[in-house]
Image 1 (cartoon, rainbow, N blue to C red):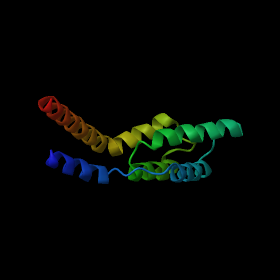
Image 2 (spheres, rainbow, N blue to C red):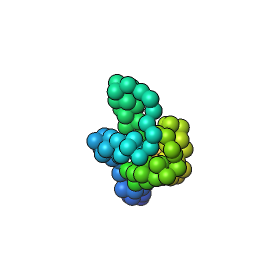
Image 3 (tube, helix red, strand yellow):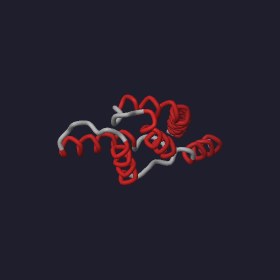
Image 4 (cartoon, rainbow, N blue to C red):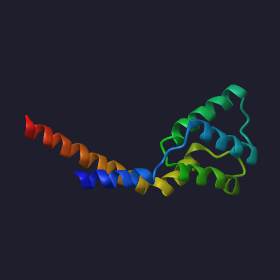
Length: 117
């Protein structure tokens, strides 16, 4: 179990998350470097909130890389689908490994609990 915990910690260290404020700042930079959608202030606020909610699940380095490189790939403010494709490409292997290790840890803990009862 200690080996699994060690690997989990090592992979977790490779997946730090960004704060919502930092994500919002990067999204605002992206908006200024691309042609924004025609939307009201309320719609813009909702878009920012929705993107922030989704982006906080990804590792910080992937979020920064994708958002900062988007203006070079997109004339217009990118759709969530466009950003998600790049984010998944840059981080899915780390997140999948982390999830698999967490499942193994949970399975071992459950087995230990069953044995102790």
